[in-house]
Length: 255
Image (cartoon, rainbow, N blue to C red; front, side, top):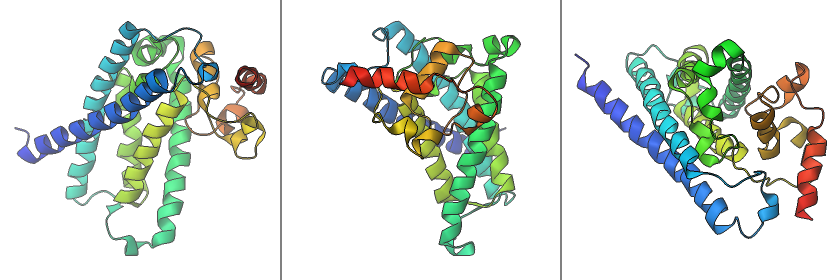
């Protein structure tokens, strides 16, 4: 029999994850596709309007993914209760400086993990079973940000299940990384380009993934596998050499 505490964790995390998804993804969709969309239609990256049939499929997959993510969070908390993770609550244990350092390390590790599993998921033998659901919508909207097939969601959970045993992390660091992941996923699936024309030429913009960068992945499939940063794509030859030109074309529509 599953202990009541585990059920409590699972229901609580499921509620939090679903609330986060509907508030952030849903709120962003409402803002850009209903309120602001008509104000700057030229910023749209989509070539055709979103279809509600496909959005419903995205939402369904996101709910299934939330069930898996909640299970992963439940396992992490139960392991924390047993004292076998490296999660901690006392900031003074490692100092304030470590919060920032550990946060950056987690983002870099997560980006690397995501790049390689994402690229693997696009192999023909695995794509149908692990990643096809995420591409059902063709061109993404904020609802697509967490629309994963359950097996893919399980693989993504493995990163956080592993990292809490490898790196000492304050709960603030872990929660911040999860929030950044959510916001960044919604941003890159937004369907609107928010960054200025100088973005891909800026020293920081050269290494960060934005809406145009990720929209290329949803159109071409075999390019741009990163989550936050472009360096793995550039290093391993999966960066679109025409990315900057694509960005310029988008920006020309703004003028």
